[in-house]
Image (cartoon, rainbow, N blue to C red; front, side, top):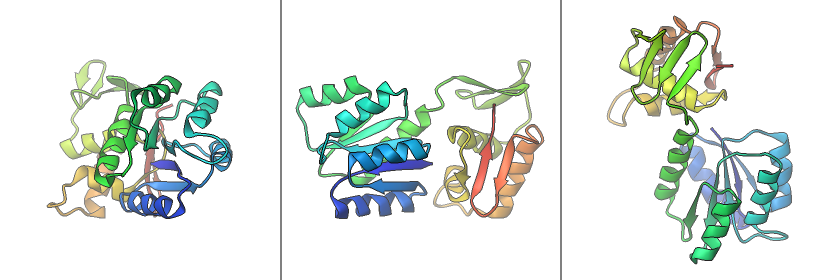
Length: 216
């Protein structure tokens, strides 16, 4: 998952970058809105994380430009503003969430993951001749459930949440195994093999990085 972080406080910017990197995210960091705008033209992101009070123009103004250009990438504002008028302005522009300073990093990661989960918005996703029911967590073909283990099903959901982007192996393991369980590359390959039974051409191994699924 790739995040664009816009925060003009360099030390605070680096603190958030280090934290998100340790959580398995790929983070591009910028200090001003003009640089952020350039990055959005050059890259695709799963999430924007924008400070509100910035040099040259506010995070609100930047997101407004992006929304008017058709960019619907989810955005969380980092703000010291707590008044309802400011928060309403952010949501009206197209923000998905906000978090107030001083920042609680544990709360931030919960909000980020909640938004990224919601990116898979449809209850049923069509993948070629198959249908994956998000709520039931079952794979179907013509209404008939298919034989897929619990771990392989969770793996499929994790890949779908990547929206066609490469999902790092570390993130996949965090999704499949709790901190008290031991994960392994061998076990992960077993579940990938189970999925490739149904999706031989859609799932790709990006060597040394992770996996992705193409559902187009």
